[in-house]
Structures are given as C-alpha cells and as structure tokens.
Picture (cartoon, rainbow, N blue to C red):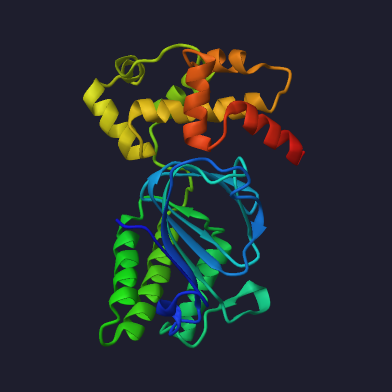
Length: 296
C-alpha cells in the first residue's frame, strides 16, 4: 500500500473534517534518534501495525505490537517509544480531535459522530474502565482504514457521511474487541519468547535459521512463516534487529569499544557492524555514540 500523510490545515482532503487531525500510512526504514520521545496526547490516537514490531510505553505501561495489532491512546495519556525512537516497520494511524473531556474523563466526540449519547457513553466507559491500550489481531480494522483513505481521496457523493460513519465503526470495533480481550497478554507462543531471550543471551553465536527453528521444535519453512507472521520480518532480518537493539544498549556504555560491541552482538567485524548499523539507524556506531552522549 502506498504511503501518504494528511494533516489538518495542510491537506485539502481534510477541510470537511476538522475533527481529523492526522491520517497516514508511513513506512519507517531506519532508526532515528529521539523520533518518538514521551508526549502527552491531546487527541484520540489510533495506530494499526501493518508490518514490523513496535515497543511502546503507553501511560507508563510497556506494550509490544505486531502486525494486525492496534494501539489506542486517549487524551491525557502519555505515549513514547520504548527506546525513545520509532521502530522499523509500517503504521497506519488516525488522530481524532475531541470536542471536550467532561466529568469522570468522559470524552465527547462532537456533532460529526452518529453514535447515540448512550452508545458514546458506553464506549467511553469501556475504554476508560478497561484501561485498553493495545488490542491484538484487529485485522478487520485495516479494511475500515482503507475505506476511509479511499473516501478521502476519491470524494464521491456522500463521502463526508461515509468517512464519519467509518470512524464511528472503528470506535465500535475497538469497544467490542476490548470487552472480549480480558487479558492484554498476546496469544504469542511462549517458545518464541524463550527463543528471543536465548538469542539475546548469546548474540555472538552465528545463528542459522534451521538452528533457531530447532530450538522451538519446528521445521525451517514453518518456523520462517511463523516468525514473519508474528514479527513482520524474515528470521535473519528479525535477528539483525535484535543485534542492533542490543548494540544500541552497549554503545551507551562508553567504556566498551566498538569492535568489542560488534563481536559481542554477532557481527563478523567492526566494518560489517558499522555498515549494518548505519543502514538501519542512519549513523555509524561512532556517530551514534557521540550524538547520544551529547544529549545526556
């Protein structure tokens, strides 16, 4: 799907919809320092993961999102990347302005919404009381997002009504899923959680795909399919992302030299490490370390 970004006051497609602050599809292909620092939301933010793995902190709670997962950040809630930057992957997002926040944090959407007062109140209660931040396996939401995008760009007869109906539909889907999702723990095989822990513990080892597959009791093909499904990446790409995330932690310890970090995180040489690191972050390890230390 093609990338796009519409912002209120900058995109004519949003002129009929003052309540839509932003809507976008963005693919992030490299790590940029301080690209997702802590902010307090002044709107309802809905994020849907198309591919990749995102580690976020929403209202002081840590969450990991995979393809098909949805995050909702309510007004007044804090939101940031686990490491302070946006992870590699693709997101579809929608930011909705609220008319007001009333007693007991009740959110009033505005006259654009076709939800009845009682329906709106019920959805508010569900989102507030359940403390819902991340909903898993929300693939049907992608269809609604696609329809909103299509209506905004094509602007056929009735598009204003249809866009608002689709946003209402999003809130209904989110509320329904929230009532069924009593446990926010993802239905993610424990074997994969243990695998990632094992990989991080011994990153200097040159892991092969068949070796990783054997650790979780799967054949190479089945393992590759499952890793792609749950992380959005092929196994070796998934492993490289782990290596880079661990390297970032070590680079913040100035007493450890770059060559040592390269070998400890499984790269063949400091040059291999530097090339891969720059490809994913935009900086060489030395540049990253210098930039990071200047921020502290």
